[in-house]
Length: 261
Picture (cartoon, rainbow, N blue to C red):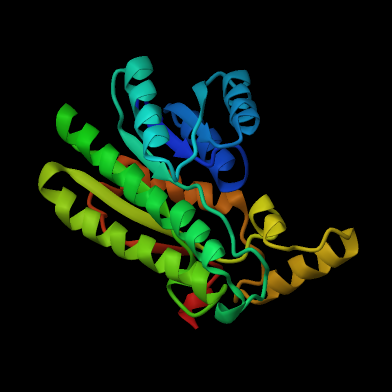
């Protein structure tokens, strides 16, 4: 059986942990040559090590996705090492600084930080991926990590606004890229308490409190389970593979049925 991503070169941002690490591992399992990009270089190197230990191909690069030069350099390193870029997974993001914070609780600096990491990064990654895809010819795939918070009012106003922007950017890139064989889609996860994403957003440190929060998050989804990084990685593989060759401009909730209610 042929691996779904055999021989393709993929960049995964935020690959040092969570959805990024899980997706980088799955991409490699399906035959992709992976670039693990993260501002946390140690985390990215560990993901690369895990891929290589399993027989895959990967290398790590330090990348602050909010910085244009870093994104350009990551793509250049990919093309230099692998000769091409086929998949750009703009996954890196940050949560709202404090769980439960309302719009008026956010400082302008916090809003600017959310925007630069969650939205500007997707603009930069998409822009320079499109330029590389057009230079190569033959199309390419962009996948972005959005959120159910960009689909419904959930997760905090400032954070939700950045993810809503990601969703609209995804649709627009899909339409602009279609004549060139470039596809763009987004996954939209719901609550993922087991990842460091929610931890950095204020998930309790106490083990019992964390377990209670995990149960509460899971109970908010009709299927009754919290979303895992692996759930997102499975959806990501489908959307960047030829199994979804005629799918573009879609926002795929990975949410246990949350937005269907």
